[in-house]
Amino acid sequence: MRLYRAGREVRASSSYRCAADRTDAVPRVLVQRTEAGLGAVQLGGRRHVVPPGHALVIAIPGPARYAFEDGGRPWRFAFVSVTCTPPPELASPVIDLASQPALDRVFTGLVERHLAGDPGPQAVAAYQLLLGVVALAAGTQPSGPEDLLAARLADGHGRCGIAGLAHELGISHAGLTRRFTRRFGEPPRAFAERQRLRSACTKLAAGDPPHAAGASVGYADPAHFGRAFRRRLGLSPGAWAELPDMLRPLP
Image (cartoon, one colour):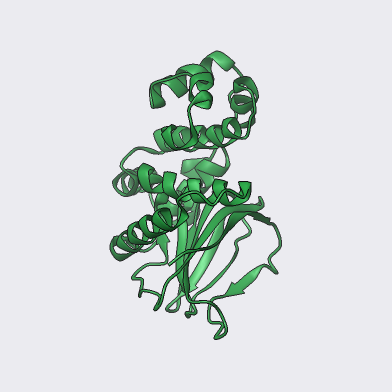
């Protein structure tokens, strides 16, 4: 078992469609986390949306197909693929990776080290990632209206009209909110704030100053951004940025 590939990509064309059934492919599991925009994966005759914070998890070679989903913005994603023989059977192709901070840190660490050319403890981290995502995929429920709301909230920095989306999907506002809270463990506003702060963390990790990181995700007031950040993570944006990568908490 080893890290096969990792990195970040952006796709904004509906022509981006990939099949996992290549017979000449190295056997592996692909984990592809949406950071902005919207993706989709087809498996077993079902289409599953992959909103921000979630990841598609598929075995290669296998029957899955994944693609850019035109949600009005480019699909930005990070990915890690881990070799394994044979690839495991996965009950669901979509997992809520954002709900698993420790596992998400392993995923992010593999991406960052690979991009930096740092081999690090890749074999151990790849094994941890594989075990974690397979366990999550075994217990994840199929995507529904709440997943689309999560995508729009995260991608629009909390400025999604919930009532309008509920009407579009033929579900009541209260019903959609209940389904969302039951699925994600928090109401839509809290979820949107968490995703905004996760995006800000990505900017801080890349070297952006706190005021710029906050402004990039919709916080016009640096003080407001600092309060929200400390409330969620227990330290200021500047103090967070000074920590070593693997010690940085995530929202």
